Length: 260
Image 1 (cartoon, rainbow, N blue to C red):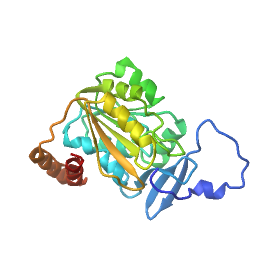
Image 2 (cartoon, rainbow, N blue to C red):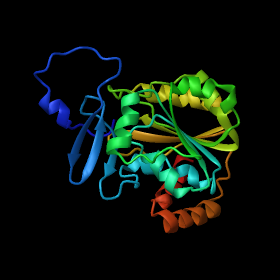
Image 3 (cartoon, rainbow, N blue to C red):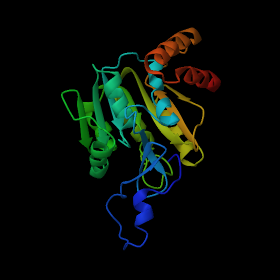
Image 4 (cartoon, one colour):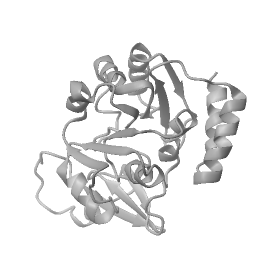
């Protein structure tokens, strides 16, 4: 949903017979040392720098980690929509004491993340669930269970998140612990944006949108309870994040302050 470019498979399959699969085909492209994930279109669904497989290559993916300004040591993190496993890998490496759950409906996405995007093997603190994200957040067993939710739920058309209703966001809220935070990748230059923001503000106590990056990507931070936005605290925490991870956390603080 970020950059339009033809995938390797798309360029080679223009003369093949067409049929409608259950899921959009999972395809790849590479350029300048970066491997991109596509769902059979030119829209990028995720990226990995081959020499730095655990680094969030795209700026919107870095912004999805902005919850770190508010939660230093999460115990549990859930990723809704695996994509190229960018956020899942980063969280798995960065927070060795946290339980990580990734939820992905398409089995081909899981398989290609394992084979081409360096997804870690599942272990006692990491699991990948092949299921619908809506079913996951509606399951009462997952309520009050996660400090962090990260949602990046796009299909091949990349027109907006595939789950965008007040009911979905209310269920996400229910999955968060009392100080929990959800980050969501939105498409700012599309009618779905206002629909999502309205649904989020209905479901959460506080919503902040960071500045737009790439081709209209906007990351929203959704808080179960009103967050501590003290400028001095945010600045100090951002400096810690930069020192420990090299993520551009100071720009997140500027974006939060600009959002008012």
